[in-house]
Length: 200
Image 1 (cartoon, one colour):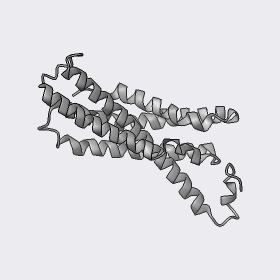
Image 2 (cartoon, one colour):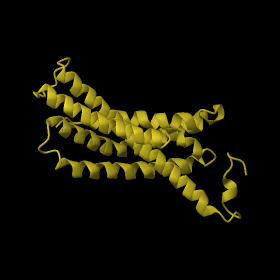
Image 3 (cartoon, helix red, strand yellow):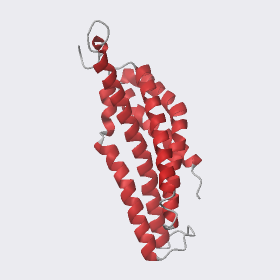
Image 4 (tube, one colour):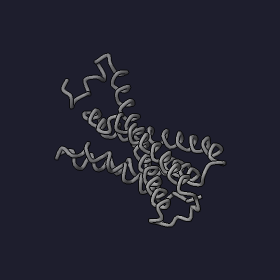
């Protein structure tokens, strides 16, 4: 069995569990990495915007003192960096471990994983909402960022997964399919989150 041919794990080979476990683990890790990447991007962007408002480079109407603004930007930025760190530590290039699996099975696994991540983020935003009531306004926006990423996860599943599948199928002959599928999903998920985001 070569690296690019995992079909030997099915059928007569007594390892179907290993085959599907590897597939589900790879797609779940991809879904987690993507979710954290989009959340991290949103929170770091928010932290930069809050910081610029604190230095009066832009006016977001926060009406906060410099200390409170810098503190909020720091905490939100650290949370965003944590999300990006999870994505990088989870090996953003892990999609390569799915090479050799049928593209349709990979797409189905990713769709399920992204939907699970979407529900998890919406649940997390709901739990955080009550915790930021007495905190400065930027933290409410940060929770809305998480909620937007969760809500847009369904759009990423419906639109992004087929698009990534098409990219992988179309460019596999050139050897670029697996490498461009994840960036395609990321861009679509991020754009969907920006569309859905509604500043509280």
